[in-house]
Length: 221
Image 1 (cartoon, one colour):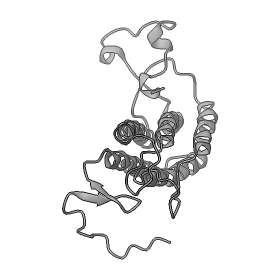
Image 2 (spheres, one colour):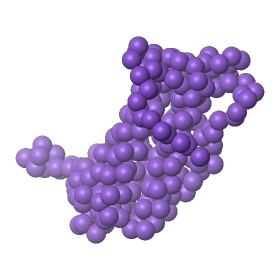
Image 3 (cartoon, one colour):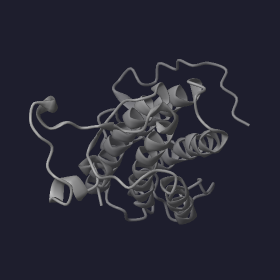
């Protein structure tokens, strides 16, 4: 049980902060940028859930994801350490399997993409599109933290790298959130379609590369 009796500590007034293993690091450490972006993504998903316009199955998925993201952040703030006295919770590959299963189930509800789409539609869908972009940023900053610290297991407190499974989780999550945004728009008239030149030019005919490809914002590989 977590017991927070005081929110401010003043220990960060020197520009450092504590990591999950009780070591300290600069507030400009790439790790912090990574788990701050994860926290922001979680906050946006909280706004999505507050809209109250989602189906029960989507709400259940997002509630699970919110809990997962808290654990992703905890993983990112705890350097990898050999034989820790208190083993921390780490992101597991099975969590990624769950996201992929959700992607398949939810994507079956919407039509195949034959146009680029714009963020918008229902309030829930618009915020899910926003959550998608924040999660993609979180993935990028996680890879920046991995580049800075590596993925090696440390032997002393504070020296270990970053669990790369966190980045893989965020990659799949961005795909799922994009799909859920489309699902959220099913009762709002469907996707908001991109119009070339803001509608000032004719859209490319069906069968061309642009009209058949998925939205480029949906796939970071």
